[in-house]
Length: 148
Image 1: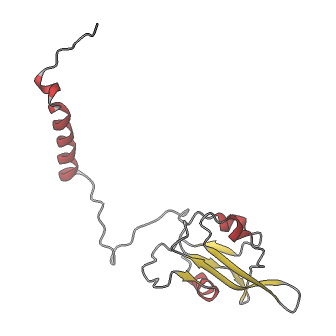
Image 2 (image 1 turned 90 degrees about the vertical axis):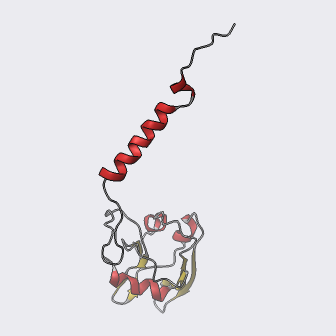
Image 3 (image 1 turned 180 degrees about the horizontal axis):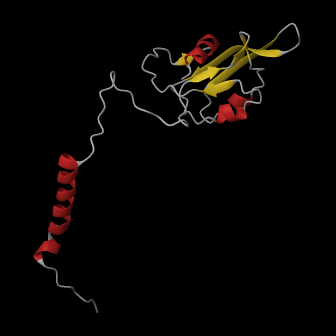
């Protein structure tokens, strides 16, 4: 046996919920905090934990990377490609180091996996200047000077 509840007109057409939602919308529209920024003149402030563009650390103009292949191994997006070579002193170095920025999810796992602390993620989040989607070793070395 089912018990039927009597519903009044306000409950039947959800008028109370509609009016509550309308009140919240109008309150935020007229008295709420403005969140729009004027982009070129104003810049958004990101936290210190923000992970942006990659760069390779260098000591005396020589990259710190030893092409150990840990960063492409742990990368979940499979966006890092390295070709290793050897120097005269029998030390490995990356002949080719490329990061496909469109595939990258900026998780920071490559930064955590690097034993030499060679690859870093800066706090530069503006990637509008990037016509290139694959950053090579030269571009990654240049970006370290623009780290904020």
